[in-house]
Image (cartoon, rainbow, N blue to C red; front, side, top):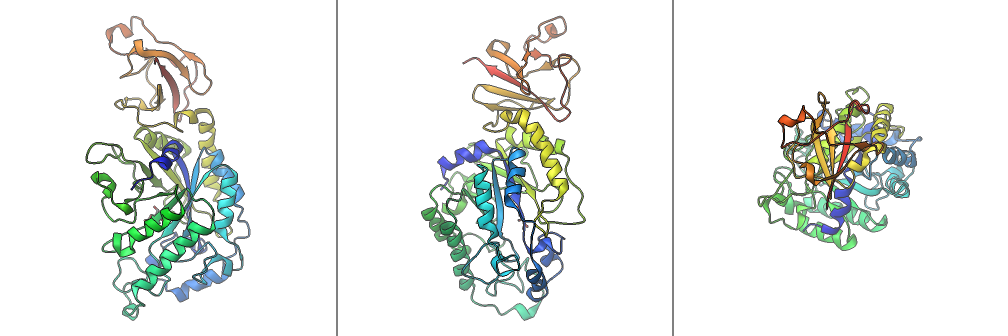
Length: 424
Ligand code: GLC
């Protein structure tokens, strides 16, 4: 059952920060390092003993997110490696038992709330550290090929642990805006997690919380028109922007959030410099909003607790664009018009925002917007007036509305936004 009320803030927000952080920042080869290199608990233990992010300053992170124009954040409370960034009473494998001795989750929540951002936590259903989580023969476990790991504690023990930890997160840290479970696969899905019970427990403690759709594997039941209790509130496409947005079988739009990395890793990877440019990020954000979705953009802080400089720079540039043009993103969605050839439309009520990415020769056509419906046209970044053009060039296209940006003002090489206010 979706939480319709909370979906309002979520669908207005449009842009959030994903934070993947944990012990894996030390090997610095991404958060799947244990899987890829078949690293046992014993071998991985050295990172636990060493972990001491002395430069962790979540207030700084929150400022970076806010300046970028982000409205919410989601941080890993526990990733697949099982290491808890919070002071769980159910395990010793937690940040408060490392050299840093800090509850990293508590500090994150406080800092991001203080900046007025909505806060979410990521919690891994998968756990490569817990003795009751299937190992030998599992699809992903680091010990999946090791028959010594065939005998495990009963799986119910893991379920009790996992439910217990989720309950700790839902009862000890104040209001959480979002819970991001990750992930289901094969028969590890739905009721195998005792998902109905889990979701009911979460919602009993946190009335307003939003939940992602990863308690289910494969196609989300949100698309079936008959969502079940643990279908969550929104769909979470990963490393893809859905070609036509997301609709259910009845053609109704379904809330979604594309999670996307800034380089090619979620967790810190010291050799990965394949960062997306700020232009690309802004354009992909526009694309998400124009299709009715959100962008959850990832950063992977390093072992000291610092967000990589490259990420900080890109986010600052995105923030420059958002400062002038954020009105066309936040609170906006699908415009109900076909995609124009020069870029994309977004819409908020009777305001349509034309994002011009491919600068036209001469005038800018506004397909789907009849001239008689237009109240005003303004350049969004400075509010300056633009006009409807009718002259010998446009007269061959009587059904199209044209305006002119150049030569009145400069095109923004990322995206120039024109705000068209329609008459009531
Ligand atoms: C995946 C990965 C994971 C990452 C997540 C983010 O499912 O397992 O490492 O946290 O996607 O969407």
